[in-house]
Length: 339
Image 1: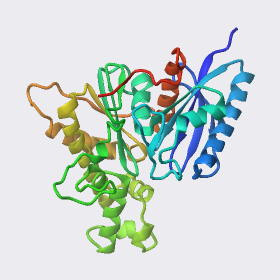
Image 2 (image 1 turned 180 degrees about the vertical axis):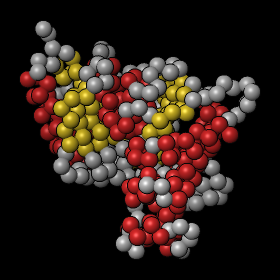
Image 3 (image 1 turned 60 degrees about the vertical axis):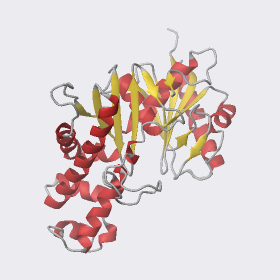
Image 4 (image 1 turned 30 degrees about the vertical axis):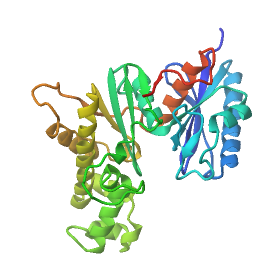
């Protein structure tokens, strides 16, 4: 029996690097994790090259052919997905020709995509939003990212920066954001915001902070997201209230996005959502419904939890690479709408 044509998906974040072989149905195999954080640009290229080489050997031993590599990167990219504009947590990546440099090392066609955009495509191609006409997805983790797929096309925008839902303004003259603006959604509905709220409440001994402080050994600065989520799952009122408030902000922000895009489905994913589940998604769904525009005219938009978990970006990047490999010029990204 002839082997399959497969791709390798890579997820490059500020603290992790993982890769896997992905087949045409979005199934992962031979997941490989780099044992340490990769920071300098050349070090990251070396690490990705090593993981890809390992996975190519595994695929070849099984009779399969690796035809392309897709990378989901925690970075702002140019519209043509050839260069990195900026990557806050990736050292030395700013204004680097990442796609060409990596392709030269690997000897394979390479597709680079923003991690949240790749996750949205993964959910559209193989997940909870499969074949939806207009998919909007928010990824809630340390910050908030987003992706949009309309009529089978990944929307990246004129400058390549579409879908940055974390920077929708939800509070006039609100909290200062790292982007330089004020009142961005990310300052109220992200893992960073969650921890900031919980630490402030614990420091002020406001409300039922006893269990949270006890879990942190009495030091508010030791409180982190996993601690809050674990307590919420155990029924702690303060932790549950903090996650519900975060979810409410997510729903309010996505309702603004929905007014513009008229989605057929809204998905909520990302690391924090994976950990907290319905403790975030249920209040987000309720807030989204209460703020829906054109009530009585617009059909009810389903708000769902994303289906692929933390593999969404990797699967999406691999899927985009597979499509690009079928083109005459495989380095050109396929089905990307720009305006």
